[in-house]
Image (tube, rainbow, N blue to C red):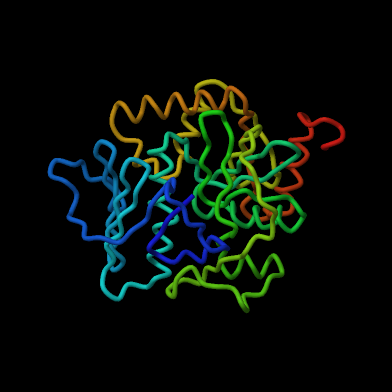
Length: 293
């Protein structure tokens, strides 16, 4: 449960008030990163149980021990941009501080479990999530997928962020959709779903592109799984220092103990969200009881 000084319409419902919130978000003055902190890419930094980010023309953020976020916005900053970085990089950092493995992808409910689809930016993860939503599958989260110590994916924000051309391919108009900020042709597509509980991760699919003509799948086993999970950890720049690296390795080992990892290699010229969804659903049926397949 959140308590926030910042209005968060992206969450789809008013925040519930609580005397003991899980995370408190407040405004306050912030100094530059502490002296001696190793600078990380994209304005990120981490030291002990604190980490933060400085975003030009938006502001500074600091996450503390997985319990508190302080925002020091630049005067006149676009509120949409403030929310964008808060609900992305900063809340991803909070989830790391709460000992979750945080993957860069989306999670889709299939039967009594879920599939997590990861990939680099531009791989088509969000378009694929929207295709699953169109088919009636519950999308737990898009872009940021926290996985707890028991291997369960936690439900995220009830929206998918899509570029205008992806919406056009899905047959969805942009009228009435909110831009993620005023400088991007990227929009918030609300998800219509019931309240969801955390679900065990049974499958992990890694979206990749190739120059061939066939959409293929390839199982991943052994040490290669750890490299892929690190590569597709959300803001993996924050997996920094011996303790963080060791903890991350333990988290990955717990996850792959109960989940299958598969590469999905998509042809650059002819790949579609529909064909990819068909391939993933067919692969999951190998493990599903007949009544769920």
